[in-house]
Each structure stands twice: as C-alpha cells, then as structure tokens.
Amino acid sequence: MEQPSVEELREWRDIMLLHRFALDEVNTKLKILNEEFQFIHDYNPVEHIKSRIKSLESIGAKLEKKGLEITPENAREHVRDIAGIRVTCSFVSDIFKIHDMLANQDDITILRVKDYVTNPKPNGYRSLHLLCELPIFLTNRSERMTVEIQIRTIAMDFWASLEHKIYYKYQQEAPQELLDELKEAADIITFLDDKMKKLNTQIDAYKADIEK
Image (tube, rainbow, N blue to C red; front, side, top):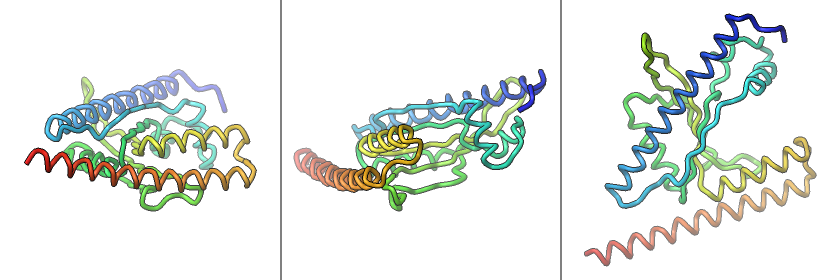
C-alpha cells in the first residue's frame, strides 16, 4: 500500500469521524427507546450496548478481500460495517422488539436484515444483523451513514464470544471435534433461550393475575 497523501489522510480522518458520530446517534436512540419502554411497560429489553469502529487495518483487509484498492472512496462505498453496535438482551422476543423500535424511527432506514435467529448459521451462530442508514447533521451539511447493529441474547453473545476465541486461537482451523462440541453448545443455548422465554411468559401472566 502506497503512503497516503495529506488529502487522503484527511479523507480517512473524516470517514472515521462521521462513523463515530453515527455510532453516537444510534447509541442515543437505543438508550432513549429503552428508557421509554421501561417507563411504559416497566421492563427494559436492552441489557447492554457495545459499540466499535473498525480499524484502518481491518478496513484495508476487507477491501483487499473484495479485490478493491484501499482508498477512502472504496471504504465509504464498499465497507458498510465500519461502525458497529452489539445489543444484548435477556430474551429472544426482545431481539425483535428492538428491531421493531428501530424500524419505527422516521430517520432510520433498515437497508438489510440477516436473521440468524430464525435461520442459524450451520455452526450454530445466532443473531439478528441489521444494516441501518441514518442522517448525521453537521455544521454545513448532512451525511447519510451506515451502522451495522447486531442484536442477540446474553446466552447467544456468550457463545459467539467463545466461538471467536476458538477460531482466533486455531487461526480458523479448529479441530472438527471442537467444532462439533461448539455446535452442541449452540443447540443447548437455543433450548435455554426457549426455556427462559417460557418462564418469562409465565411470570408476566402471574403478574397480570395479581394486578387484576
């Protein structure tokens, strides 16, 4: 990769700054929606929010994988997950509640949905991925930016974290026996999530009976 010019460095800085602003906007929206939901329903679907900006090295690697030149223009056009947010919640039903709350926002456009909750990956990975676009208002212009939002239960997040560590340790060539164990763990987590959802439904029904 050639040494970037001063102008290119400025463009890279602007891209990273704009994506950080986009993360701030989505973080604020999620916190407001969660607090409002808590106020109305006495229950908050969001347990934890974690955000990240892809490093320049990761952006460059993704562009190279796509066979594209590493330029600010290509990063802006072809790397849509520079800004990412992971939302964890207690129950599977919360995942779709959060999706619906975001979809109802006038200034957010959901460009793409990958539903690995309903249709898990072969290795057992489950999560809901949303590619969202929203405006960022600056002093002299507005920019539409994309943010990838991953929504999953706490149990799904624990599994995904373990899977990532295993693949990193074995450089994506983990023994098949270990992969089989990981898939079995994913199936157990699916059962656990379903069980917890049923228990929560029973608790809600019990509370409703008491309040009558």
